[in-house]
Image (cartoon, rainbow over all chains, first blue to last red):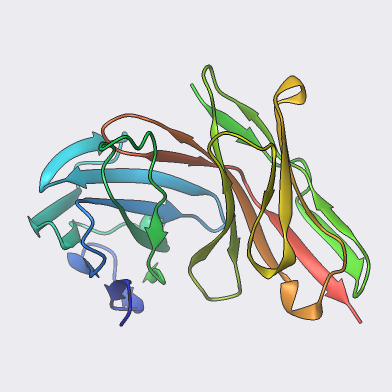
Length: 117
Length: 114
């Protein structure tokens, strides 16, 4: 009954490789996010999708390409991995604003620790 | 642009002692404020949130936070810390829009001594 799940939990790969991280939520939310947490624990938003449409794209290299096949899934594909991509990547979801709500909280997945060698 | 400052990188308290973690924010409108906790190797768990209304909000695990608009602060408090509270604590401010974009502070690592 996990609300927001990510696979894999750990990912170790070589520089130059291409890899994907998957995220799924079963909360019925229509908005999903990717955050990056660097080695100093700083968390920064990367992308957000609402109903499969990209709505936030925060100065992220175009080697990173999110894909949302449906509202419940948001995957992150990374091409030509670099050492600096090593981080923990968190997926999150929320219900979009509307119906009288001015803000809806985000629920986070457990994270994927990516190590690039 | 919104921003969050957590001035304390690392705090150590004794078990049973009181705790206050500081958070200051910068945002041009009514802020939506959050505290999240991250235990080692774990994801983020929401402790509490402030959207409007009573400026003292209660959260899970005995935590509370007080919103002070005049000081642009949202400090987290707990009257008696337990060893299991050792973790990283993040303050965040939410920006409304189509998506609820969160901006996080740099976090405060809490160590609890027995």
